[in-house]
Picture 1 (tube, one colour):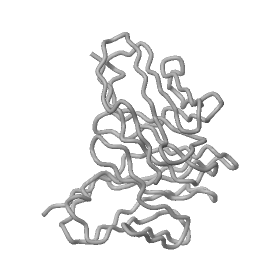
Picture 2 (cartoon, rainbow over the protein chains, first blue to last red):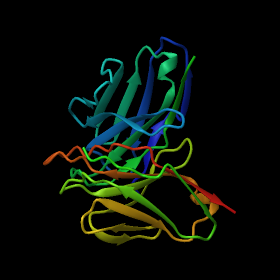
Picture 3 (tube, one colour):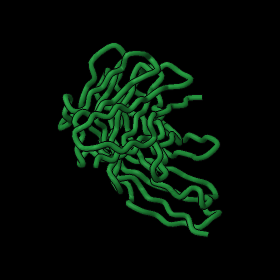
Length: 117
Length: 114
């Protein structure tokens, strides 16, 4: 149980294009999903919190117009990197939390490797 | 926001017990302590979570002293496949918040040698 998937697992795109990454909770409903970014040899950096049916909450320094988040259902959240540039190349990871309590476990997806040429 | 401090790296041999200690001096009353494991190019995997005293599951034990200013993840009889980065996190301290945001520190790179 508690499986989170991401699609695609890796994507290569040209500079200036937009890329959409999907995060799905396969066997539970997730009221809250989180998006992280991880550069090589570095830790995960929380980008935003996605709540089903409401606007995402972005961490300081994360451009909400560049990283569009949609959480339209209890099992799906999407992250769209708009007008991607080489500096956006990174490992994007989502997580999903089943319960409403802040102590409920977050389950992470396998990540999406984005390379912008 | 509770900040955590862990050793950057640790080395061990197969079959040994490994203890990774994390300091979190500013932990809030409502915070839980959670440990995750991450292999290269994969998402983190939940290991164990606790609030106080001792918690044990099929893969690890978590020891938390009474003052909760630190915690120790104990991995019994490690194998080569336990080579990974281990993160210690404390929950979002915002009282009453349901967001539960997790802020990852640098983690501890554990290398298990044959």
